[in-house]
Image (cartoon, rainbow, N blue to C red; front, side, top):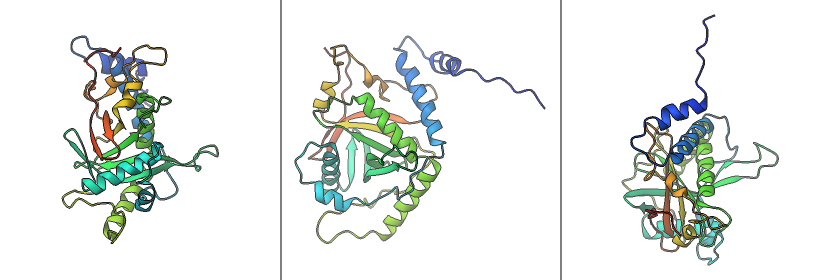
Length: 274
């Protein structure tokens, strides 16, 4: 039996493959953390986790039920945003120069099947870019002090990684195809819009991503920690940290008006606020 070649430790891979190729002297920790997140994201995608119910679900009835409510409850805000985007923009949410077709909300991907202690977990919003890549949007309300943008990012990566496991992705793709074949808009009430020129096909090998989506006031609550110390979660954005050869997932932060259905990329600080 041939001798096995020993593998480098994860630490050696980090400093050899992640830090050594960096040019100049950028802030190093975001690159290390991005690499660690990408490594775990890839492992999660390769796991055998799956949701035993329908992954894709048409939420139009729920959207119609909740879209006119004025609550700042984050689930209600998700439905309001979904309704506004489909009523005002044919289902396309534009974030900077990135258009995304929103095709579902409150998307299940994990549940009691994994653990008796685990309730059903759902991604807030799920979208599709023109290249076939999925985008999970993790939405936060304007006064949410409890969960930071980094917390929201990790939530989104957890949902996205689980959606991309082999069984979940297969179910999501086939269920979406079936819905598109049978789609008929409601004669009255709310209906999701299907863009005529949008290729509604999920491409497994595309670079999928997570966007934390929240009003500007939410981000301002989290530029400093609870004890007034500066934090720099925004450095994990693709616009700040691009891994040498990294292709696991895209990450960004965006500002949203839940009622108008408009969004823009968060203006990243040039210095630490405060």
